[in-house]
Image (cartoon, rainbow, N blue to C red; front, side, top):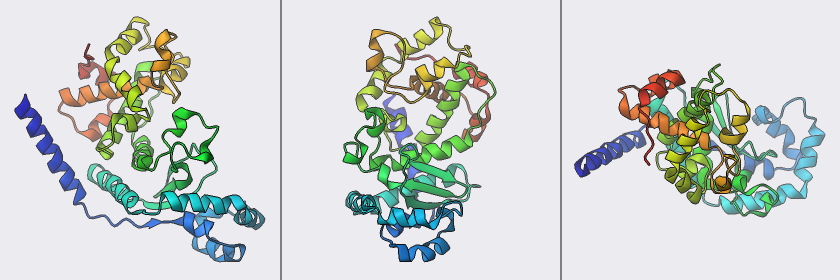
Length: 310
């Protein structure tokens, strides 16, 4: 077994070296710096250079008001402080794009713009051929700007999460939702996304990939068998009850088994189980990533031989 582990690690390291050698030129446009450092007199030139960020439906008075807002100056100071050295972030961005190029060579590498956003739920957006990264949502979990935001959300407002959020946005474009509304199908749909994310950001921990704390991630691993037993015994797998989404799939501070242990559990535990099923399927079947992404959930589950460790 030790020999198999060593061989597996050697193959993994060789693959990552191959991916790291993929020639991709990453030019991150720091639009956040451009806009936050601009004055109203710069507006005409900005609109000409970056028409995407200045829709015609928004009057110039709105942009001028924003530029004169003292909060914008404070925002620039905070972003400049956290991202004083942007090189590590740029390397992380490049790595994600190299992994996308390796697994999806037909996909043209998107351009990357750093911006600011008033909606903290939109940290990264993949729009057409562009990644838009809102740097004001990565200032650190305890930053004063995030007071009032629930902890399970704010805990992921760290700059180390940028590559994970990029991978998440891309992964959801590669997994087609099914009309099958069963709980099992939804679990495997999210499981496909999580599995793909793990390939695009292989250095990310389970906690980072799922947006959990390390303690919550450990709880999920330790209680996987009990969670699966609960789903089976409660006959949830083939249920189409939409309330199961909020209980076990949507992001939340914890999952809702309606038991005393709820507060110990991480939210969206169904995504975790779905990913474990997909991992089992990939381990026990000779199938490519692209083929797996197209397989129906029922086929994946049937052939996964999924059996959580007790």
